[in-house]
Length: 343
Image (cartoon, rainbow, N blue to C red; front, side):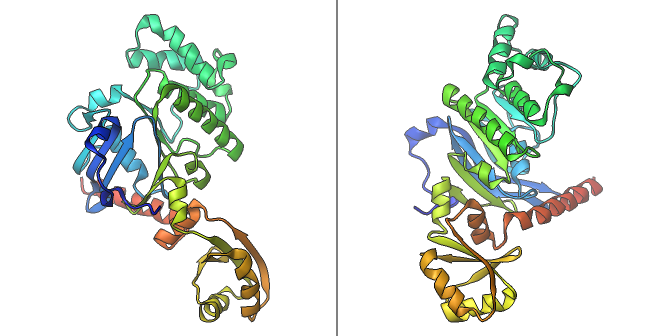
């Protein structure tokens, strides 16, 4: 099945709209004359883990900031938990949890004190606070560190505590903005084990942004966003099916000449990906002997693998997400700086 942008997909049947916890139509956000988000449409079902995948500056954090009422949209509409983010921002905030990209804990307080403060801010009834704090800490395996100062926590423990804080007031949607940025792969996988358990036991909807391909694999559905536009949407398997077959990655002593020979002699396109060439073929094992024979220069390395989400991004945008990282970050910084200068 081929995944397409949601705006091109048929709208859900009327009876299914009751399960939509996030509805976005024609959302635009401008910084001055630069559009950070360019008219996107989204629909997220209750209990879904939904991922926004793309480089920094692609529009991920801007979109999540609008949905969390931290930014006002320039145009378009967005509803979260049945409420319009522009007309009822307070109502939306009471129904969502948010884990920021940057740390936001008070490291001079204990884990329990951080959660107690959050419970008061969100109006958790006094009689329920203690029980909810105990349950939230247990959910992220921090019960034994409840009364430890957060300054003594590792990066992974701090992130787990932020997740516990995000679910403490029983929100309908938990927003995660680059939730495991800066964590090592093992700690990242551990955080997602806890998030998966929370979703499975509570039915919580999770909306997250990421630029980690392996992290996006945890999502039920993914929207790939680039330059403020959704370029594909579907399950991880649906997106990878857009590439199909195998990916052959080859490195030679002259990749420019090799790409030309692959096109002329084998009739396929070799795309440069860093210091290698990447070729999409139906049968990698059958293609490699033909490749070696066709090339007039020595081959340094050649590998065959199944398509990944990185391959999907490269196919849709013409560049790897790693290369897009710097472009997106600098573009957004210029846009925001320009907007500030015009105030």
